[in-house]
Length: 275
Image (tube, rainbow, N blue to C red; front, top):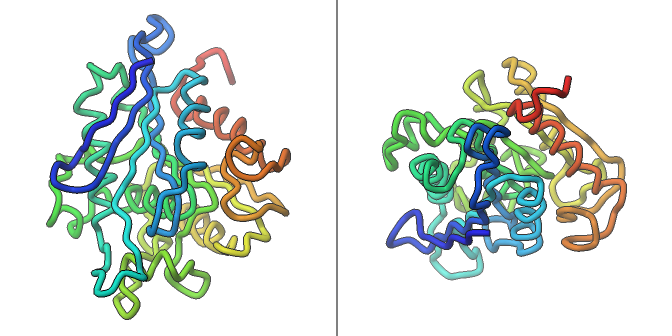
């Protein structure tokens, strides 16, 4: 395994770590491997460790090149802390572009990059999926002609809306307590440009209401964006892999990983012998 730890944006407290296979398994993936970029949750105020490395390693053992982005966060309890605004989105945009730029060296397939996010990290992943070509992002960050667009999104109990069912803490950190929250309500920005989505949520999530998932898949359906959604009737927020290794042990919810892996294989056409 080759380990990377780099800063995709010098001068900013951002880290991109990578866990890379050093061979490309010639003949299986045409000399490069698909990639999963993991964005941990934490309400944009911290980054949850159990939604970072343990998740990346699960996809690594499945053959993927995996990365974790430790993006910009803020603390609402810090006096005079300005809103984060688009700062985390610039971090994620830069990370995807950097992975594509180094695809030959890192043996990654530049056309098979999935971005996976939990909770607020899910909001960030979905934000990149809907705003990758946004003029608002382009004004502050050069997106290099769409090289920041994910090829797939994996959203795990994501924050989506800034409206009635919002996770207020996450949106407040981005927009400010009294700022314009509407920009960060992602169900209103999904469109045909949005990449295919795998999404899962628990119906009794007490922190991020399941309506976040429902609003987003309704928007995807409206615009004809391919998606797969799994709703589990029980399960606490923040359960990550739900296998006891990282997050709470919930054998039923833990099936999301195998379902996601199958979906991603189909999405990327990794196994041509599968229907």
